[in-house]
Length: 251
Image (cartoon, rainbow, N blue to C red):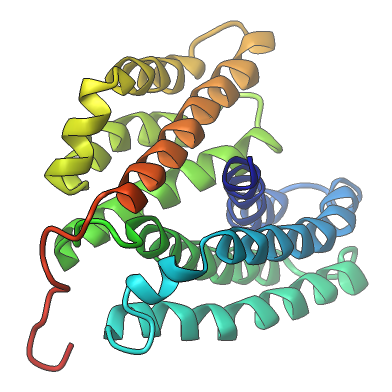
């Protein structure tokens, strides 16, 4: 349950920090107030749940190569830098939401995107845990797919016509191809391909549904993906390492 809650709050929080400021940059100042009040509590909640998620699997981060694998160390260090800066940005938006120029909001969105990607990479490394290791290219694909789902989740807070949901739908099969074969095959045997297909259809079709159904459809698709990610993490933790961490010169 902690895993699912952590994923859900992470999706909404970091996706909101990307799409929210970008969308609000072109809106009237009075429409920006609600996000500035919500952003900091969401960020603090996401950090708390991430800590609980990591504490629930204390060996996963070590198994993912913390202290021995440079991509893991880089992801952890990036988060240690990005999260405090993101909090400072939220405080700046809270203090100057009425006077801040659109460029300032777009810069906040750009840094939110950097943080979102760092979170996605970290979560993918944490998901791998003690399971089979993947290549750097597959890690990049899986992280970008996860990042697109986060932005789609954030978009639901601000837009009645989801656009990122379509990108999230395209990312579903890409994510499967980026998973280690043992994990992907186990998910297919358990029937999770049905959930993945349903999620992709809901996300792909959300934009063209009647307005009152768009957000629920996109949200339902993302919930299915969160459950899929949680199960993929469980399978990774239950699977003995099939290979050793990828080693490249300078990595």
